[in-house]
Length: 357
Image (cartoon, rainbow, N blue to C red; front, top):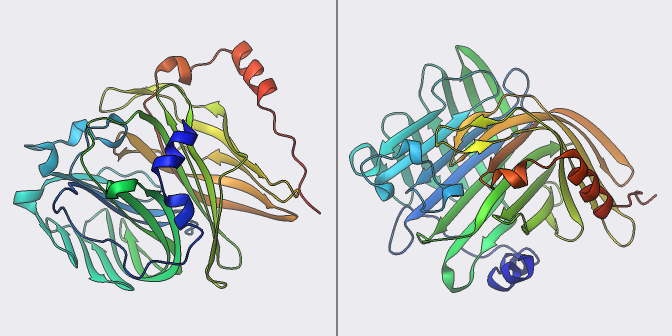
């Protein structure tokens, strides 16, 4: 499955090339009826821990990418916006009719009177006005880019720019001034009738020395890996490295089974790890423990935060505020493995691990 995906997806080659002169960035137009944009800021001070803004303009036919519970009159007339921080929230997810509640253009995206994105590369303004969570942020994008997807024939694009974020976040009357790096992201696609995608996780960690680590894995409905990657980005050096060989993600402990508002049975991760090792012995290892602050609304899944211990070669860091997105629409037989099967799987997929000195 991973080989077939690599034949259709050109993002691997693009990750080895400089930033394109002009990136696609627009609302629904022509054949592109599914539009997604996001801002993610990890490693914020407590109690926030993270801030995310994720808008989905048009609802996909793919279950993993669709929030059925939020549909308005029509799927393609539905926009959802998820804005959250770690503490408990009630109004983190909002659903709008695009025709009746939104004003969307190339340089201006407005969702009712609550959320607004305006501007153009490299400077954007992002605002949210709400009694529970508000923010007013200036986003300055860099040329450090990571391509997640670039399907042939222009069927879909998904990219992330390292950015600098400055401004104010107000949660329940408490104002916090921030100035740090984040991820500014955009995706567009045709409205696919079917894709066999069933599992997705995406995680962001802001590291010391103005660096950032992105971690992502996608699986199909038969539990086969479609994509498993790490991206190590350096704002000071202006570089981005992608690793897609020997990238392993494993969940060690789960929370009890839940049922999402869409009726999907799902287990959320309590403890998990990432491991990557190159032939020369260089490595990246992440051990993570969820904070248990998961919030529904990322299409069919959840967002939250985690504590972590990370080792990049011989450099070690710990942190309280990694960011995670997690959606699992696989059949329960893949989510629920008995202990014997888990032991066999671990024996078959052990990863020898010793970081380069």
